[in-house]
Image (cartoon, rainbow, N blue to C red; front, side, top):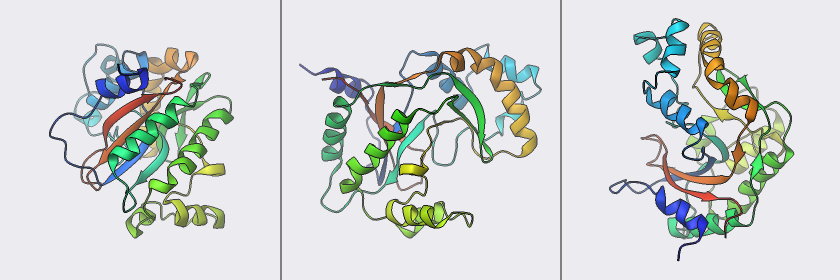
Length: 250
């Protein structure tokens, strides 16, 4: 019989015909059936659920202008929080070994509640982040970096260029060289990505429109109850869900 973690993975495996993946990442994605998951489908899929789009209509963001807003950030096409940045597999490592490792890794860790969330800015993007610091989330992210570093090939020049911000400090540059991401370990902060980069006007208007839709979700917070493995074909397509592995399930 499949255990709970395996069952969650099997029920949400990638569709048949998905090409082999060049890079993998470890994220949080909302539990199916929750209010946050329903919002994510509406927001990223532009589905008219009778609530979300009405909020945007009331704020003047409906129609073609709304459709052009970059809901997804870069290579992502769904609601997520990143725990381990995208990486290519090291030579000799295969996806089956990665999945098996994540299954075991997740089963030995417990869910973490975010507490109340707030709608905030991260640079030019909109995100949901905990109102109060949650060290357990930062620690889980650090474990994801350390626990899977043996699977990851050294960062490529392309991966370093993705984060080539001239404002990085020396420590962040060292992290970038080591992990392909300057915002890991002590530099990591948990947030759930809602948009790609927006100009100042859109930041304000989208924030005003999103808040009535997200207020109840933010007040309650969410449980980070699983780690999701996602993959892409070398950045050419949005990252796709491979499996969702529940924390603490044996």
